[in-house]
Length: 78
Image 1 (tube, one colour):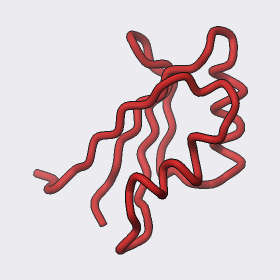
Image 2 (cartoon, rainbow, N blue to C red; image 1 turned 90 degrees about the vertical axis):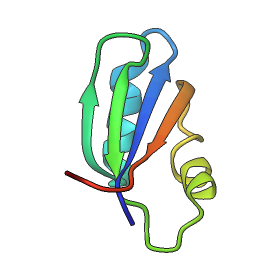
Image 3 (cartoon, rainbow, N blue to C red; image 1 turned 180 degrees about the horizontal axis):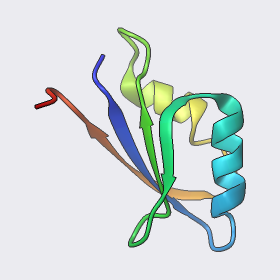
Image 4 (cartoon, one colour; image 1 turned 45 degrees about the horizontal axis):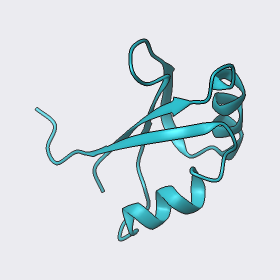
């Protein structure tokens, strides 16, 4: 499957704790802190055939401190 990028907005003061929890789950290929509307940018490769929405809901959105996410699916790298 292609890469997914998930932008994560955290509740104020929780970005580092959220990032630590994501890192412990070993879901990601890369994880960055960012400026702007979202606090974190997560790059991951879900398992082949995975239901993307279900994968994100079950593996990421139960982390306390996540306020909102924006998921971008990729198709082709140039």
